[in-house]
Image 1 (tube, rainbow, N blue to C red):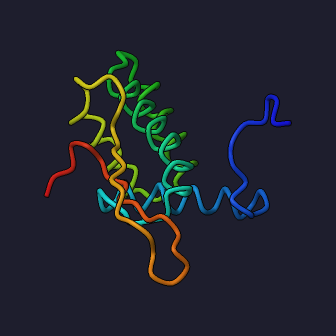
Image 2: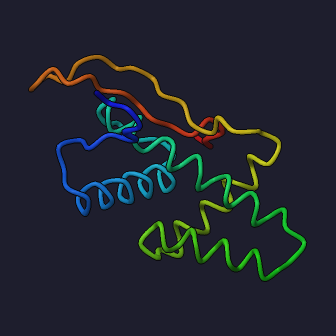
Length: 128
């Protein structure tokens, strides 16, 4: 039984799973869209949504120290890449009127090699 079991393992141990989440999150924030399997997209979607919400709270705060704190928290979750953190806060600035739902999943069909269901995970307000 799956009572109170949270999250997916994706056939990986803890370190590999966290590295996968950070890498996919960074790629999505940096490029605006990524093509991946459906399981990985669902896995990383919640993480990216929480990061954007964190950045929005940092922008909306009156306390400048809280803004610095949120940038540092976001950087710790994105391998301390300054460019990606800056882009994350730009996305949060564009999405300040939106109450969640920053990403969308578009189904593409099965992958040719192993028939894994492929999807396109993209930011809703992505600039072309």
